[in-house]
Length: 471
Image (cartoon, rainbow, N blue to C red):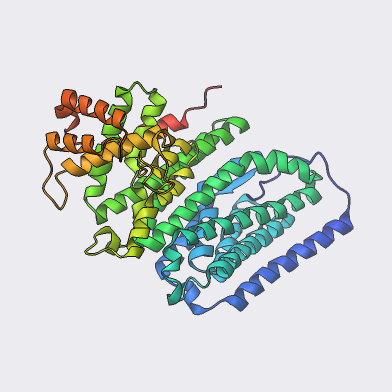
């Protein structure tokens, strides 16, 4: 968050020129300190790899054209660039990106000298603080000894923690400036500016974290594709927020940011499918079966959609797997631990989307067993969410009958018999019987090939999520 140009005379001006001058001096010192600290900690490797530096610099320079202006402030795509710089490069590139973004933004908006100073000091100091947090907790990301660590989920959590630090520092510095400049109390700013925009800020941080983890695991092509999705939806957000009043804008922005995140997840699924061609077709088939089974047992449309979306994304946690685990010749105990962790990894990613908590739970528990022998929590029977039990049956059946696998597909009749053998131990016996009945009745229709893109119906999801909430 940064300042907007003043629309008129402030309503609560403070007349404390000495205090204000002291504050300006402190801001100047903070700016100098952030730049000096970044220079002292800088080393040549921070400016590598060059494609990432160029990408971050381009986002920082172009952020002004991908901004959202509200009555309470200006929200820019530059935050995503800064989080990437903090996590993937280091303090000096992060500070440089922040200063570039603010020089362009403040110049275009023709801000006053005091607001120039606040924006520059703020966007120099909080990227420095965030990058320093990453370095203290994760070490130097350019150190070859840390490469395995920065590909882990733990590194993603550290990046998100660093983002939270920057959010607090950013708001505190802007709020103090508004306090001196307009006389608005800090408590009022928290209730009117910070809390209403917090969900959008957190969504931006989650998105930036996903981009960082995607890059460290899958490389630059996935990062470029995901950022393209980001910019498209950022523009959709801009168009939407400029057409509505403040309350509707904030609500719609949260919805658009959630759909943006879903687009990034879809990009990650596409990237996973490039490494394992079976992934997309399996996800599509499981989603189709899951929705049909949910409808068969009389679930509501909302619960059908939860089962369908969980089927689409139930394997997204596998995007963190190395090729050795994804295409194993022999699995070690460490590999098995990674495999058993993919429900938690997938649930963590999906759970960051607004309104997708139930889907995340379904993904988290889809490897539980009715007899309590599953993972990650060892749930028993109906303790397992209904959508998880549905996805487990559908995934098992499609795995047995799919053509694009390393083994010959099992005939549907034999696969149904195997499901019945697993009923009561691994799978929900009642759901298995309903699933088999459905297959015997509609098996030909359900067995038709379907694409991941068709099941995703991305544009329809975006339009649905962009609709105002019913009050």
